[in-house]
Length: 422
Image (cartoon, rainbow, N blue to C red; front, side, top):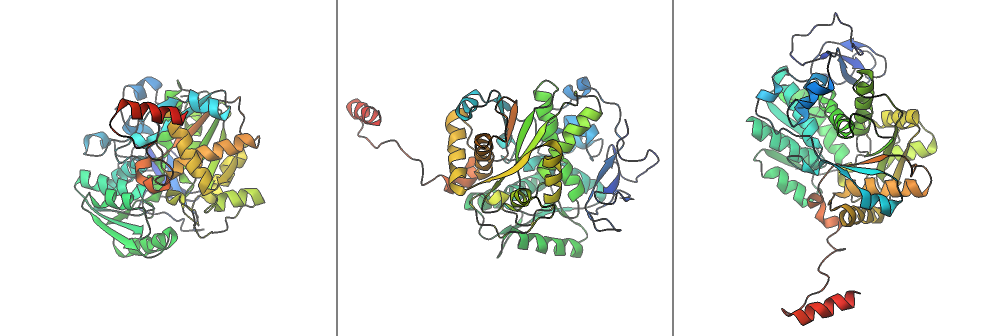
């Protein structure tokens, strides 16, 4: 079945079913290249495809990674044969304990902390690197709030490439260490993420062999998030959930999960049942949630001030498209305070044994708040996306948890401690 791209479109690159780049605003198409803005209207570009015939059985017989979906991604046909971090196929947890705590009939947690660098960013970077190699780049780069920095540095090391990673100097120390350990160039920049992103755009124009995954190869990079949607559907037995809550930073993840669900329905791989998209942000950086609440179509940039630094993008590139997705599906973009974020982290940990970073706390806390407000349907099957590991943001909970008691090495002291705990 052909989707978006005309069959006569040809390309000099082996990027699987990808046939062109199409503007999300005016629809203008250009050949596959390292471009991210439409030459006519400066709107964002995304990949247009001509998909082959594909079956559930063929996907299920594929690699235990995102490459089982390579026929739906803009990557070379040989992608699985080249050294890469092989992300994906993370667990989908039947979260009955959390469901009971929240008052939801059926709840699932998509736990993407199991990826190679413990966040969903391994997915998007793997796709970006595969495309960048085919497009002729040799250095892998990014501006990042942390998780992407880890993923780029690790993927470049695995591929034998150099990496250049730009981060805000205020980034959490664990994320700095877990990027620097891979040996690439790591530059801490004075300023917030939006300052770092502007610098990356300048550098991308100055260095022709540098692939900034979320700048000059962004159309390819963004497609990696579709694999979250693909996996959720496959792990549910090839069906779509009724509701899904997705953390929002740039907004690309939510829009691409939506796109992935739509593609599966169009290709006949799932029944195209109705689903509702919900976005989650921290109040201290909630430009998309604010626009949704105000009924606006334009995102007003904000200066980030939240512990959820991985979501702290004050001027999100895909913000308007998040609004489109949630409004089209009947959802909402909610936001929660930093205290609620910490409560969300602890609730998920004690009910399901999953330790999420602050972005996961945002997702859980937003779901709770939307349920209490009557926006999430407690009787609908719901999926929460947990996109990063709590070991990356220990500071968020370090003052809140610790030993139940400190006792002498005697059983009597243990009994006393247990008794006093009640």
